[in-house]
Length: 336
Image 1: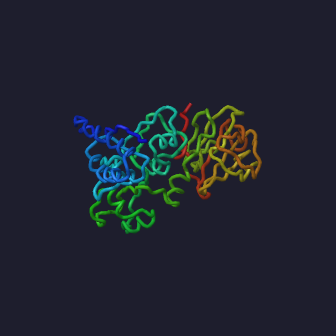
Image 2 (image 1 turned 135 degrees about the vertical axis):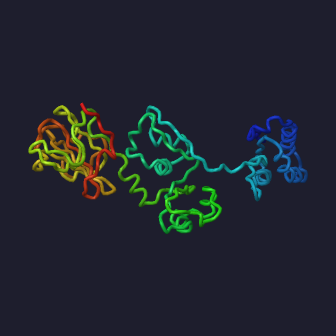
Image 3 (image 1 turned 90 degrees about the vertical axis):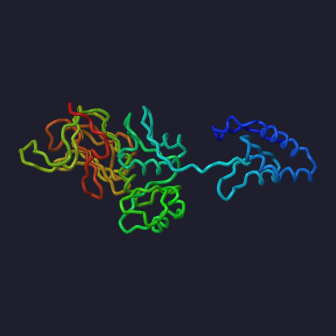
């Protein structure tokens, strides 16, 4: 028994004679039905014949498979002795289409999320890609690393557990001393380090807490609508009709659900990575303290409680207890 499969591995060789194919077919028949002594002689010559052909030859005879699928000192020899050049590292640009997700893009390219995320560190919301957004897509698994001052190739190799040789080869670096601080390099086959994952992925995955509404006030210093004084606004305000469902921006555990002076009815959710989110001025809270909520789950209804001059949601994102700009993590609705 044998399997024959044509393989046009090199388009430039399409004009070659088909003699090699007929020879391999003939060899396959001989290998399958010949006596042991003749079979040994055929096996020993198969790789040399196969290297000049674009036909894959696989048999169920272990000796043939072992002989044909061998690696030379310079090139990998595929089934049938065909030389397969190791692909060089390349990056392509991909334009996000309607319905795309990072997970689906990674799967289609045979990559993992670590690779896509490290290649596109400007992404702030893993679940809300923009149609037309351009992504860097490497042609192999691995992660990007920005060389820090004082780092050596040996340090980097040890941290990612990837050999120095593989790192130098992937980045076409001939001498380790050519590695300069600030340079971005690709670590083939690596996954994100825990510290980098927390930084890149920890804040990724937030969604807008209300599906409609309009942007009414931003993060940062602003004039207080009650007394006209300049004060720091620790979140963003999204104007909404009273009773609009408020959804958890990210999965987590409810650490507070109740009344806070100035904020009115408020829900606070604690997330992984030191993050928390606050939803204030609610008409009604729908979850209790200690409850675990899923991303997108309705947790409250938009209202006008506390220090408020109209129906809206005050939304905050905090990192280790300090407010950060939500606009860095979610898409902001336009002004009304």
